[in-house]
Each structure stands twice: as C-alpha cells, then as structure tokens.
Image (cartoon, rainbow, N blue to C red; front, side, top):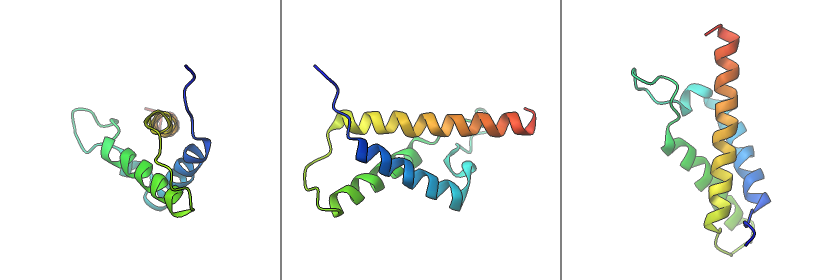
Amino acid sequence: MADIIDLALVADAKRYLNKMLEKRGIAYFLSKDSQRPYRLEATRVEMVLRTAARARSREGSRRRVHSLAVDHARKEVRRELIRRVVAEMLQTGF
C-alpha cells in the first residue's frame, strides 16, 4: 500500500519552521541538556507540526490530517533541523 503524503502539510510545516528559525534561532529547537547539547527538543518539533495542521484546517480543508502524513512531515522537519545544526557546527569549527 502506498504511503499517504500531504505535500501541503509538509510545505506548511517547512514554512512555519523557517519563520520560527528566523524569529528564535536554531537554539530554540535544541535541548538544554548539558549531557547531549545538540539533541532536538521533540516538543518544539511537534509545535511546528500542530501549527501547520491548524493552519490547514483554517484554510477550509476540514478533513483530518492522516497520521502517515504527519509522520512524513515530522521526518522532513527533523531532517531540516539536523541539516541546519550540522551546518552551524561546521561553521563554528566543532
């Protein structure tokens, strides 16, 4: 069976992620744990996804967001955050 991917949800999630990164920076999405300083905060990633899903429901799409579509959007957001963390680490010479 094919995976269901809501490309509009992924695009909205990436758009909100970029807005939050511009406003708060990459450190907002990182855990404050000294043992693992570059760990992503799962609640912040979920907040991006909830905001994107809420925006989709406000646009007039009253259908529920499929769980596989949310999982795919979560992977895309995490992948983008990891890419940016690695870029910041390389830039600082870590």
